[in-house]
Image (tube, rainbow, N blue to C red; front, side):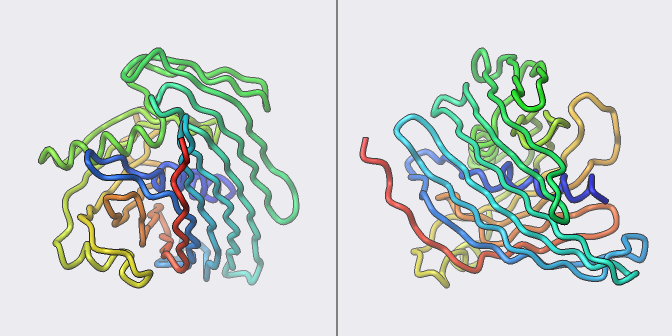
Length: 266
């Protein structure tokens, strides 16, 4: 179960990384999301799930920053509970070639894992290397590896061009299981559905897209992904609803608070 929780939490920075669209500006923002159990089979042993994720996306003069803090409580059939706190901070350069990350995973008051490091690529589409300072470890990144914001930019560009799928190797620094082979399917939302994203917070309508992503270990040959995610999001990078699907349960993650942040003064 600890592995499932870690996979659950590490995927969020990948999916929430804002999308860069030609002729559209990314909207720096801070969002608060409520997490609840969407479904569970008997095999999961999970009775309920409740959590809060605070997500902040900022734009600097040299790159994008992501700050994520998630608290999650799971209740099991035997009436035991598990409390998880996960924090993640990252920076990705505007050219998509450099990446810095820090992650911490606490369960039931104990620190289970801390990660800290940097990664760089020879260029977009090139190979690279990730260097973990804590724990001390290096990971070779294969040709074609991208970082999270670059990945979703490529997904959206492919969707805008009329394609319906894209496969990429993605490194996000949130676990030693990185990188992941991410298989994405996507497409445009109907205009009336897209207009509802952000409407409750007074945002003007923008085009919207749906996406489904399956995460496989990059070095494995498994036919079944470790987990899958789906979401609806606006062209400015704001996502209002996310669903995370595992073998035996799924979680619903919904936007409850939104604060727009000012762009950098560069």
